[in-house]
Image (cartoon, rainbow, N blue to C red):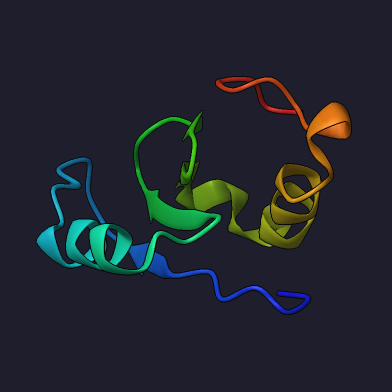
Length: 79
């Protein structure tokens, strides 16, 4: 997204333990990583947990999170 590689992992249930995403994040330290599942929205930098029903808005959410720090939403909030 705009020059950033953003790993995205999709899960179809609430159990979202995923070794592959953790390994990728530990190895490459991405600015942002996205996990989609049935769980609620949560942003704990750099991991964004996005409910499956919000996938239609993923570009807007990513754009908001990649804004300069003074314009970035507060962690844990939606927008």
